[in-house]
Image (cartoon, rainbow, N blue to C red):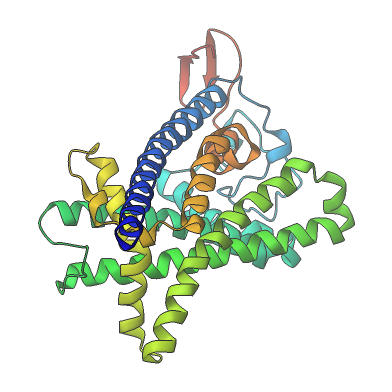
Length: 336
């Protein structure tokens, strides 16, 4: 009887191991599909917007780089003659500064809808932190491939230590910020009459989708942190090390497997215990979100350069026809 139980235990363990490995491979395949669809789909949408006919700029004036911005707030600057020179003085550095002010600090939301600024700021900058986290995973993978081992144990090298801390902090703070922003904006769209009138099912669904990914992703981080604190007390360096090994080292292993197309089998470093149903569900949701992203209003982030700055900042005179006279002389206009 004991021998039969031993055989059953071995069979169950092997079956479980095979299923877990198959699940890991399936997640890697979904990861490839998610990233490809996200990149190609987003690029296709941006290309379509860039090829669209140029819009009228009347309702967009004044642009941020106009001289006397406040003085001409209600006026449309002239499109030809000497008067045009006083308005046009753009430049790439000024444009990037204006874009970053809006992207990072959302200063237009601050000035026009301050009540929701905190939640909007948390959501957008949380997304930026998650993007930084992905870049850190990639850097960690390259570091591991270069010979500085990031897993299965944490290497004492200063560069590895820096990557470890930045990875844990960017992912944790980013997920917390996204969850906070999504929940806050969801509530505001319900209680604010003006926002409720323009909100659609897609708006609510997008917020719930992103909040679910962030909250589920935080569960293993919180569990690992609590396990360490209960066993060892509150010690920040040890806590960061423990959370990294338990939660983020497997993510680095999967990223390494991904970028090497499986030629470097780092999945062997991922323990069966690290691939819990919670982690698997969060990864599936995230990769499905990547597939979903290019076909929604969420693509307004990268599309804003095409739909706003290419029109609002690039305010050189434009008239139809083979020739156009401007302050700089006569030149041909390429039809769009």
